Every structure is written in structure tokens, then in C-alpha cells.
Image (cartoon, rainbow, N blue to C red; front, side, top):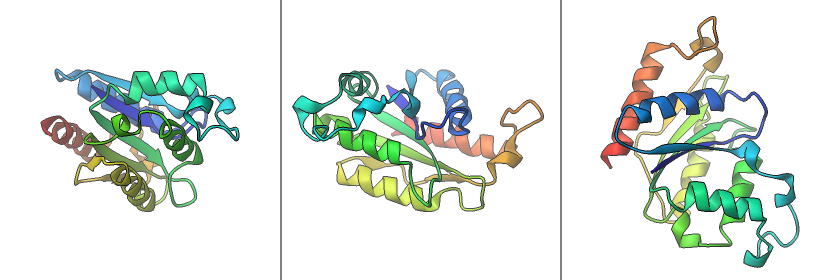
Length: 179
């Protein structure tokens, strides 16, 4: 099972478009896939007991049980926020770390995709998330995919139609499945 993580909770975010395209690519293979959106994380996650297993929000536990624990591979689509990953993604990773820590990312492979309207494709955020997941025992697919100038990749209907970007995304899916 591959879980595609949309790394922002901003409504109408661009990462969702890339996640949906990845899902379509994966559906063409024999792999099962699903999308976890950070916008599904409830505001109630933030409280002073969140770092104790007994204090874990029930919705977070349910998301962990559906999207994280059963997955053996991940694709993280992470937009650039202040030169890194979003606070909600880091908070979610912290929140699920209090329960079933070794079942979250240990010995599981993640493909990292950074997206940005600027020119760097969230390279710093890719490095930050790579460090976090490796600290938690995860493996990172060697070729992280920074996608820059994302507004220029859409056609008039808002679909991603930039050929070399689509080819790079397809290659990333093939590489992830091959692991």
C-alpha cells in the first residue's frame, strides 16, 4: 500500500493536484494507493497532552491506523512554506510518534516531492523531511523530486500538462514500486 501525503492543510492547495496525478499513475499499476490530506487533521490535535499516547486525538489515531500503519511506501508532496515543510505536517508526524512509533516509518520507503511557485522546488523542505523520516528509521528514495515554477505547468483547465514533469513523476512512481 502506498500512501500519498498532501503536506498542507491550505484549502485549494496545489499539492492536491500533484497527489491526484500520482494516484492516477499508481492506479495503472498493481499497487494499492490512497491519499492522506493534512486538511483532514482536526484543530483539536493541538493540546498539552498530545505528546502522551493517552492524549492522542482519536481522529489522529484513526488517520494513523488507516494511512500510516498499513502503508509500506509513501509519496510526500510538500509545498514550500518558509523554506521548509508545513507546520501541520510536522505536527502530524509528532502526534503519531507517541503511538506505534516503529510501525510508522521504520523500514518503509518514502519518495519526496517538493513543489514551489519559485525556482528551488522546496529543496530545503525536502532535506528537512528527509532528515525527519530517516531519524524515524525510514528509507528515502534517492532521487527526490523538486518541482519548481508550478504555475507554469498547468494548461488552461488547470491540469498538469508539462511533459517532462509528468515523465519525472512517472519515473518516481516506477522507482518507488520497484523498491
